[in-house]
Amino acid sequence: MSVYDKLSSLGITLPPVAAPAAAYVPFVQTGNLVFLSGHIAKKDGKVWTGQLGANISTEEGKQAARAIAIDLLGTLHAAVGDLNKVKRIVKVMSLVNSVGTFTEQHLVTNGASEFFAEVFGPEKGAHARSAFGVAQVPLGACVEIELIAEVG
Image: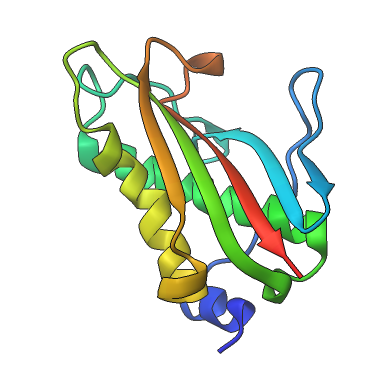
């Protein structure tokens, strides 16, 4: 099953690439690696604001991370033209806007990691990962995620 068939079976339409909000580009490709800039969580087309451990639950954070993963695939599609060219999701870095006592950043980030495995399969979708708790994310978003993918 192609990546697009899998997305269709999940009822997912890829979003267009969002315009950068500052002095950066949405993606850079060097050799077979594509680096995607951080994407922040959005809900109903607006920034999904909040802080894990204060006013957002781990499960809501996981949903936010999954939503970001879908946005990341829209950007990756724009970068390479065909998601079937993806050989592997190499690395995911997640920044979770959380209070100092919140320790479930890894569970929040699973929302994106599990989505990539579901779409690309357990081999291509498996990746190295970092999940950090941070004091704030741009625009007050609850989660920000960046991605590195290998294409061929």
